[in-house]
Length: 529
Image 1 (cartoon, one colour):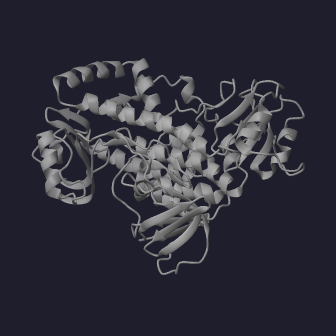
Image 2 (image 1 turned 120 degrees about the vertical axis):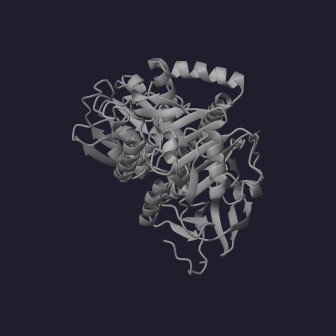
Image 3 (image 1 turned 180 degrees about the vertical axis):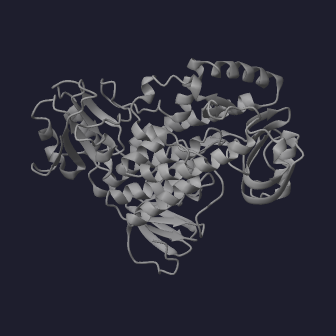
């Protein structure tokens, strides 16, 4: 997949994706799964192993489950848990009962949340399936899994290649790279917070300026025993030690860094850690390090003609809560099938515009969520008073459940037409009578009409004219006897549902998301009894 010596071919691509981070790779995989020709252009010659996001949230885990990638993610988590356990064994406070210690469930503004206060009976946790047990997947490991998937799907990747410019017209985009010019139908900017695609295309990028300087690194330390484990708030800032050996994070509130692009040195990390912790520590070696701020901006629209944005190219914010990585994966899942349908000429009018309409509000929420954390992390008396109030709320069952639900993303839904409670929500992971799960039937990236037997014998006929755009699965599900049928988009969100033999609204939903029917006899039906 990565052949640096290959000459530029005189071949058009359906889509050029700028950026081979998790968002770009996920989008490329979704497009390739749908049968489009994809080229990924990445300026870095090798995968980026810099420490970044440390975990995935529920919508991301569910998305990977729906594409058959959950076992790979679970394997990553198992390896990382071994490291975390080893760190806690040597760095947990004296006297801590490790067997009965409260389970860490995330944080808000550095204030820990614990699972023993979580109301697990809340219905928003009920339908995640095995995906609800996978979260500890750092960004670099995730990127490795997606690189393997992209290669298996035949995605072409050019590494060490700069995107130098492009010219877009009504018919496509001519993309100029340091390796040559290629012609594509569409250009997707997944090239990070300082996106070249966003800048050259002229997208508006309003927001708020940075006020903090943060560092995250994996280092070798002398004097680490003087540091507390986990999130620590002091009179001079905030720091984190762990949850695996050598990982540190510092936050200072003296303004943004003077030079965001300068290499992060051991001296800089040591100075920051000493300042915010007050501990006599020494950084003797840096394995990986990054500098960050709370710059928070969002593109006004994610599409301008034939050019689209996803991931950090569309929105930037502080990393607190690990929302950025997951926001990008959600963008890719939402955009991939819509852009593929547009490429294939099967998309109904306006389908691609629903990408911004659905994803922009979630991105706006993430920016506000991260800004709120900065507000209660500041060292001013007013902020610290608010921090005390927030900590008290988080120490209740209701408060913990509220914050964990927000962090996990189980609240996310799209505003879709229809009155059924499931419409617009990510589909529950139903266990079917043959032992398969609903996620198993979404691996191919097709839309799915699930007939659970109570909607009448004519249900499969409604999808007959949509060919392989909508597969029909006939099944039984004893755990949800009141549910008669579901229509799922390729991203797994419910476009229509019914609890009876009333099929009102199904034809409209099929047309809204999958366009005009094909000639009769072109559908594909699967039994899962």
